[in-house]
Image 1 (tube, rainbow, N blue to C red):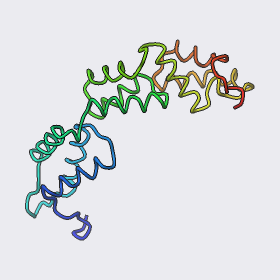
Image 2: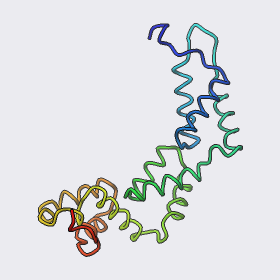
Image 3: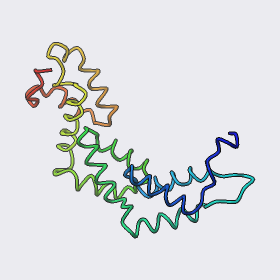
Length: 183
């Protein structure tokens, strides 16, 4: 990277501004914001110049944001769970996604439990149906293609994290989809 392309030196005020800008654009967990800010510090590091903010400043900033309510991992997990469920994500896919965002397993379990009116197979089945509707699988496929593409649809649901029993019940659910024949 040439000197002209190097980002300007990062200050504590610049780090806070970057954090606020990021939170203004994206919902984030504390762990994810920590990753973003540390990456920003690494990119702006000038080996020959004045040392900029470090991990201690990032931790202090995140602590302030948590106390001020700008960061809330529980609310983030619940919002992300609702969004992913509406799109047809399985509980396993939601767990994996939230773990990747730095959310602890207990918070994930409580967000799944709070989100699903009836946690368990019915919530998974509803999510699988939502995924099928969105991707036009199973009962939302053209009637002439359903039998021929059944295994492909089952595989798509398995890759999305749904158990075989749930996937099979949804793919074979001709009567549950009101607009399935309109596809």
